[in-house]
Length: 292
Image (tube, rainbow, N blue to C red):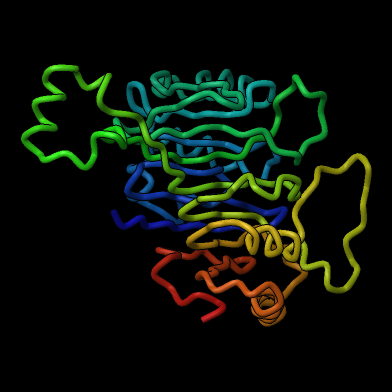
């Protein structure tokens, strides 16, 4: 199935991605409804990575325009106190949105968005907390299928059908999960294999770090550098890469040149797309990759 991804992602200002055919929104930065207009009504599930304002300031307007009984389902990191406060305020401000579901989620939970599509939160390293506290998340969108067990797969169709009738599906099939899409949210790269076997990976790359301008500030949240993302991708299986959340200090020419140079350095041949600072991109995957 074709997946239409539209989005905007500029560090400090706003980030959001619409996964149109799935009715999923990843993060909800400022301006998303103004950009999407009626397409925002397709959103049934919102997955917020963390409570930085550039990832959630579009949430109240989206909810005010599109809330109906049971939807949207707004999923957020379990221990982030910003979201219960937003829920309480929004219900007082707009009583008609009381049907919205606000859901605190933690790593390993399963949020089923369709019969064969489940979203799984993953802890990331953007916010420094103790191991039991969840304030920042990445997400995987997994396709779930039932397939015939390998030892039966080569049997003739008629014989296989009879075996299934006799033994039941639970004894003749097995669940298979494939990662259709990974969404990093904001986080440095710490696990080189987290996104292995992803069909599409949307990953932040806030800093180019080519000028030595990335300073470590202990109390600040942590982000990725472009080179560490590209090095990670070079060692795993990913079919398509979407880069965003670049700092607005970088211009388009520098970002594109840096991506192409790193694709050459790490021999990355998969399509690499990017969202430039200040630019809304519709149907990202239908555009021309930077490295092609």
